[in-house]
Amino acid sequence: MEGRLANSWRLTVNDKNFIKTALLSEIRIDGRKPFEYRKISIKFGREDGSSEVQLGQTRVMGMVTAQLVQPYRDRPKEGILSIFTEFSPMADPSFEPGRPGELAVELGRIIDRGLRESRAVDTESLCILASKFVWAIRIDLHILDNGGNLVDAANIAALAALLTFRRPECSLGGEDGQEVIVHPPEIREPLPLTVHHLPIAISFGFFSNESILVIDPTHNEEAVMGGRMTTTVNANGDICAIQKSGGEGVPQRVIMQCLQLATSKAASITKQIKDAVEVVNTERALRKVKRHPTSTGVDVREKQN
Amino acid sequence: MEVDREDGRSQNQLRPLACSRNILHRAHGSASWSQGDTKVLAAVYGPKAGTKKNENPEKACIEVIWKPKTGQIGKPEKEYEMILKRTLESICILTVNPNTTTSIIVQVVNDDGALLPSAINAACMALVDAGIPMKHLAVAICCCVAKSGYVILDPTKLEEQKMKAFAYLVFPNSVRSVLPEGSLRVEGEPIENGIITSVTHGIMSVADYFYCLERGRAASVKLSDFLRRNLQQQSTDSSKAG
Image 1: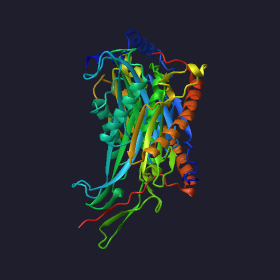
Image 2: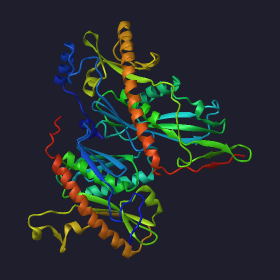
Image 3: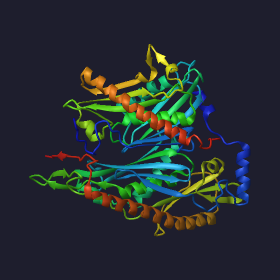
Image 4: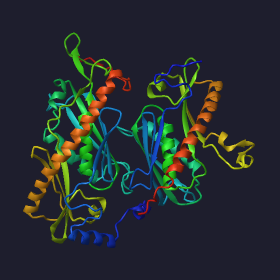
């Protein structure tokens, strides 16, 4: 539809020059300093495993659900973790419904690598019956508002949702111990996931004039910047993933500077996530005294012969 | 007849309503609507140039995208999109901006019963926030009929599953006019007695259906008052420029 091109949002030349000139004097258009992060607010929904994160004007919602499935044949004793990113058309007029574009796929892969390959989520504890039944954890990330730096916000939403998710407890039963009985939440308390560490994604933007570096770009800055890099680090100082796909060439010392900055930011963000999760967990514990059956329990009896 | 509902409400009592407008920054209009634990977020982009292939270019066109909380988009979501589109087409003034498309995106945040009515209310508020011209507002309510014959309003998900039948009803908002005699009438009946949309699930007798309509209409007056208060309060907010 040719009309769609007329509807896409473009920054004017004047706006672009203004942003670049202001950065020369270390001023950003929203008043932040180059190495200052926007305000993060983490909220949780009614259900276990639903989170909503707001990073400045960017808003992302995360949902975690679990299902019993057969494991992959080459990994019979491990659970499955899958991440689905939805670039909802409500976030940006240029996002189209339907198949995810390359930005959505890249975002999903960065978060996936941070969680799965750094072994942040323990997949072996998700195994119920080797080669037969394991838990498949599905993380849905809905981008609601694109105010720039979607990767970081989506990562925090995924972590917050994982930390507050509870999976139903199940036990082996039946005549030969091969039947899996899933207990509804009213009978047995659901269990939290085992998360070893929290990989936090921190994004940087590079600008062409005199290799200027900013952290946490807004969508205006993203339209102007020459290159971007996302580093996923955790509070222990481990680097979980680095993603720099194309864009401006950057000298080595700038990369080292970014990594050091990222490690210090990661510590404060990790603390913020843990505090928010703590508050929600105490709230839920207090509510459990008179537990309202808001979630319908899953009564699954799977027999295998 | 006293009916025991799990959360202690009476037959005709609605859940606590909460609504906020202008919550997203990129969207032209946005609103979040919650009835008890059911929460829906709606965003509006528009009017955008051009219409889709099969649409009439002499009128404005409305496009609805329904995003479920989790999972793939299937037939139920397509049905919700169609119902929302037809409902909103009948309340918007389509002749004002011909050959344009207004997109409404509905995101389900939590589903605890009466999802479609909440979505219609949220979409209506988002359209007001975006400044799309409309004839009147749409006020949606859900009524259920139980096996024993009593009718309850605004069910939770558990209640919906136990009921024999339920109906989603959409009415125009109640009119508060300076000249009550001069208010709009269609064939002798005031316009707020009309029904914009009615979707039923399950079997109910004709008498039950009319009873639901009566209860729904009474509830829609309360909802209209809530909407009016909400819109008047927030009308002093700053405009969204650029």
